[in-house]
Amino acid sequence: MDEQQRIYRILTTRWDLTDQEIMEIYKQRWMIELFFKWVKQHLKLTKIWSTKPQGIWNQMFLSLIAYGLSLIVKLQTKSTKTLWEFFQMLQIYLYKTWNSFIKALNRKKTKTSRGRQKIPIPLEKKPIVFGTVAICKEKRKK
Image (cartoon, rainbow, N blue to C red; front, side):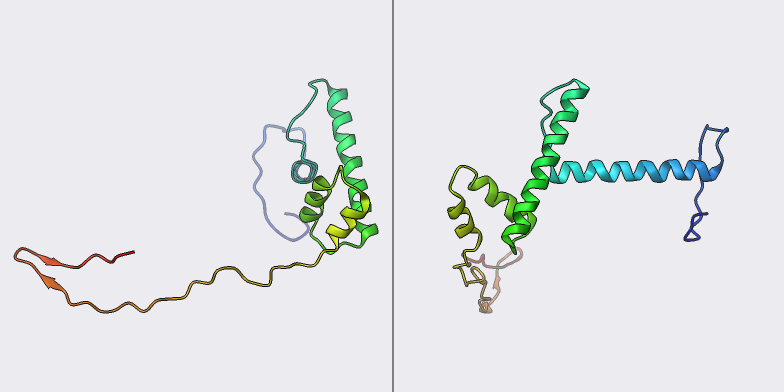
């Protein structure tokens, strides 16, 4: 039973540990899984450049530094864009001037439309054509 009075059943081959210790191990493991999920979603580590442990650590640290710096820039510019939109803007304006980036960041939306709206067209009731074998309905033309 955990702190919130939920009951769990545990299957294990570790007879040397108590049930509380096993629950604590799983809780810590879950936190590690959530961390790696966050890394995959935010740091864009889709391709590992090295197979050596030090190379992987270096790539992870560089990604964390880049993520932190981009968050600092987002906070300093007081951008109202979502994190995803802000990162896309950073990638687009990476090799352009800072002023063009700030101008694009603060640009107001020009589209006021909500897109093409579907207007329901009333269908006319056509008489059913009776054949000699079965009832046939006329096909609608698109």
